[in-house]
Image (tube, rainbow, N blue to C red; front, side, top):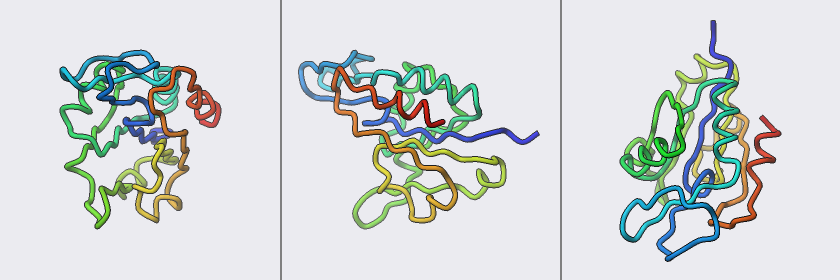
Length: 152
């Protein structure tokens, strides 16, 4: 049977916030280094659990792989594939993400959850539902992922 749905999740400013500040208001996920701390967004874990219950997850980030892997472990994301900076296309102004044609064949529905839709190739909107949470910058009272959970 065909897997129901594919969820493509972004990390930075979507599920987490990496900050060089001494302290942010949001809940600390872990300290990546002496300088960089990673904060988790409210409802990030609930969103991940809902995606896992409805289909498969691919994590697609412009961050470096080792950083992305640590975030996925800390958030307990059970992903099928982790795509990081090295798998992004490089366009003149930045890294670009695109829907792989094999995903279109394998899944009936694809949903992209990313705070920066501009990093996706133009044809993404024909191939997937793009859900855009607000840009998370470590605010304690940010609950926009609750809205995204209700949309999926």
